[in-house]
Image 1 (cartoon, one colour):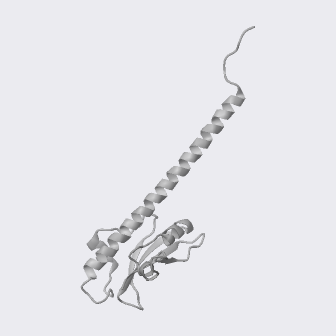
Image 2: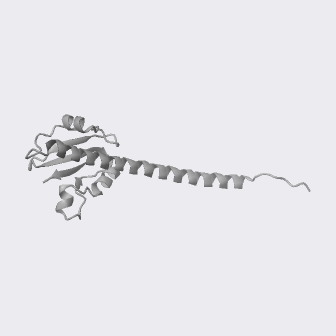
Length: 153
């Protein structure tokens, strides 16, 4: 009797199923890594913006002279964020000794991740005795969301 060598169809389907699972896992891990890199970039950009604003306007009694074009030009940070939106700096109209950093153009999941991050030098984080994130946002599906963080006194 002659012995045949080769693979059966069931063996091939099994191998393809395993390869499919490995590929799906790899895509998920790559996506997670890219998202974490974007979040880290946003954190770095916000820290640079806050330091720049404090450096440029720290001699004044208030931050009412904030001008986005001047600030972004002086600190060499683009107003574009990694999520495809923009950064915006503004003064808090109820307290000109505070300024607001806004991160625009976020999806709901990105908004929630940045909203819950601990913004250590922000007014909300310090005043809550380090129990709240310091950011505020209303994260909604299907909408471009904005995270706001207040800095100053």
